[in-house]
Length: 76
Image 1 (cartoon, rainbow, N blue to C red):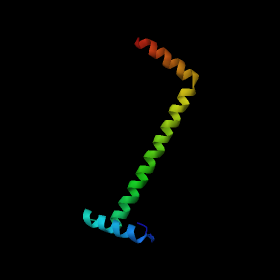
Image 2: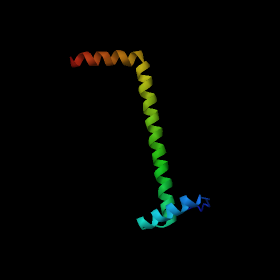
Image 3: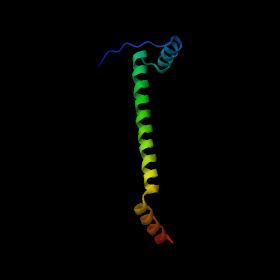
Image 4: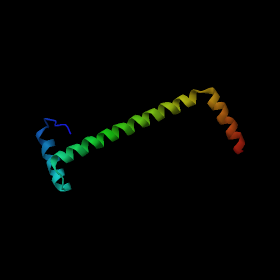
């Protein structure tokens, strides 16, 4: 593990200590979990953005659109 030293606004430090106490975990563990949660959230947002970009590229791809049209005809 690595030791970090951070400075938190007083209100955030107090709120996070209270939340940790309610959860029955240490303040340090609460901070670790919060960082892990945010990193996971960031990864999900990046994946969603990549998917949106892929869908936008598909809309502009004439070969894909032609293949899609052929598939659609097969369902009729």
